[in-house]
Length: 395
Image (cartoon, rainbow, N blue to C red):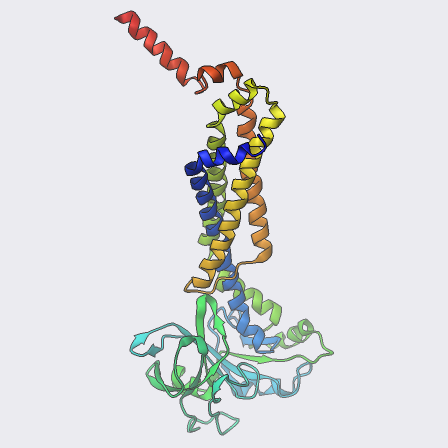
């Protein structure tokens, strides 16, 4: 009698396997959807944090450096180099633009970052190759003979020396950076700001934004507020910029996925609960037999809950393992959060055990004598008998 619940599970192994499979698939889907959104959030912040800047400046009315259309004349921003509150000469021009580079004859997505070598805005070293050649003159000069060279993310699979097309220009890959991606695995391509101006802005002196670093003894919020007083620019701190990016690039586009995830949670709860509930009700006849030979309600309840708990644990753990495997094999970056996984596991376990408990309570209320006679189909047997009596009478 000690391992009776295991023997019963072996007897009904087909139903047990299907129940475990249902729990596994639902858990893995919930975790993968959450992992996709977590991956987007991580990538959306990755580049901005890597620049080291905590002051982000865009054109007045643009809505933010990464949100709206912003064009600044770099020479008109010269006052930022000696602006109070900023580290001297830390203000740097930056171009951040979506691109559709042609790689090996195939269009692909990318973000091009144009910055000044040695300043804020891009990598200071590469893991392979060399840095691009920078402009010769500090001020803007149309004739500045800067070569079209680019540093690519190592995950793009390009080789040093390879040519790619950006806009109408051929650009040579001279180096590889260490895993700097934007939302949904969008690679970042780094080039000199002058080269970016020639490629995207037809050789005009404009940039998308200026970035800077506040002094250690200064509050970035206060520095941003002082600079924002100028009527031609909007100034945001790092925290404000990250919030804008999260809202514009992740939260708003993923509202449908968030809604789908909520619906999946509801579906998971209902399906898992129903599977567990029906599985327990199928044991009603066996429960009646156990009670008839002297088993107490507490013993029967413990027997059923052991089965539910074991099935739930196996399904939840397999779902967790399966989601981790899918996350590694996924074509985009998926970051499954440990805390979120624990919450999903706990909720799923409670739902499974709760539905099993409700079904077990209903099952143990069956009269053992009814169970012996096989009349436990919740009215179906009685209806069949009535129909048979009516047929006999007609005959």
